[in-house]
Image (cartoon, rainbow, N blue to C red; front, side, top):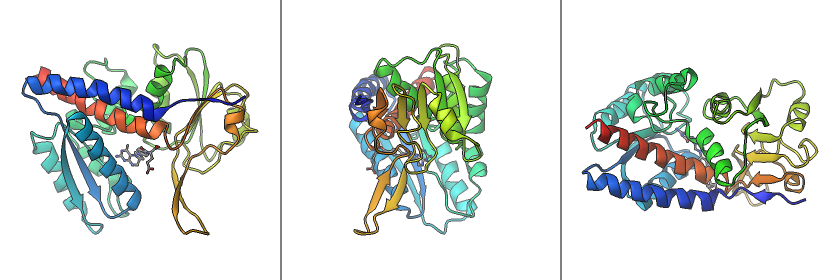
Length: 295
Ligand SMILES: Nc1nc(=O)c2c([nH]1)NC[C@@H]1CN(c3ccc(C(=O)N[C@@H](CCC(=O)O)C(=O)O)cc3)C=[N+]21
């Protein structure tokens, strides 16, 4: 068997075209959505992601606002950048690119974000609303990558109701929150959350109909672990340096060979990554529409 491809690039392009229409409609009402980014330091990965987000914005007509701070920025400097975006009416939604440099208190920064402008869905209020199941229309944005995984499956007609989903990884942006979406009554999956302290990872992965690999450990999910016919989402990204060429290479959590066992597989790159970016744009357009409705 060779798995069918969960094509994140093509699906993200479709979503961006839909969002461009909603942005046009908002502009006709005098509202221009604007995405802000806070980037601290010179990490090449973070710089590339932020640059990509601003390119995406240009594509769909969203304005871009950048706060780029040096690697030695203090807690107060970072918090001041957040306060500027909170106060800027041109910024309808924004993100603080993670991870922040060592020494910066990330949770304190996330708490300062205006929940109504939280394009990542990582503010405690928004994560709390997800836990409390506050109705969709009042809820602020959902975390982008979990939303990306569900949207990628939905747009390929891959159902989740009654499925056993094994989530691998307990990070804030994916592992800890995706189960909250997967177990909503309109999705109805059953979720097992595994992590580096799990005693028998292969057992849990092997029982799953759907595997969400978000550990950030290159190749941790191998073909031998995966149940034949399972759906596999390769979410994790790690930068490894090729010892021969010295070039940085992106590697997913899913090892070669899984495509021969799975029924559907999201490639990495080209799968959940582009969808995460599309869902960030969707969050920005959603928040701008909510703000426009409130006048
Ligand atoms: N506040 C915050 N929000 C985030 O959403 C966030 C973050 N911090 N920190 C880092 C992670 C990582 N992340 C990715 C987004 C897109 C791709 C992506 O589009 N990747 C392309 C490849 C890009 C390349 O070649 O460099 C792909 O998968 O095809 C990857 C990774 C968002 N994150």
